Image: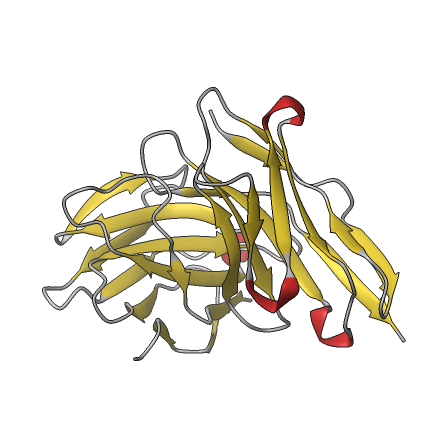
Length: 113
Length: 117
């Protein structure tokens, strides 16, 4: 069965600093991987997704993620954090044969001025 | 182009009651999935509807049931509410079509916050 693990339930960075949110997946087949962002009291917004077309995936708001099969990782990065990036971030994987999403437990990003 | 909409925004119920939540998918989408997000947790898949039938189901009891209408909108019903049912309920829509391939993007609504007292 597919699963994802997000390391670090809370990450704090200064404005302008690099953002790195970690996600490792478990899959017996090439996975479809997603990053979603959730702002307070809102639903989930898709940041980016990996579907095997390219290992480096660029998303919205300056975020990108790199698929590394050897490390079973799909970490999310942004070169320079902005105050508006403060939110909860979820990594997710599609189930083997369907589009059901399996989510990690989330990482709360705080950005300090 | 309207996105996924859900109603109501908030709901307060007492234990033992029944609740119905509603979802309208994004224009052009024919598949609706429901997720439960408990406080401090990631969303958990409840079930998915396509062509007015439950296509797949997560690990939730029969107290959770749903329906999809011909216009693709959907309802989630929860009977005999428990305190543990308090959560944000998210609806997501996608386009299954003939392929139904994994990796189709799901678009989420803002959710319904259910509080069970």
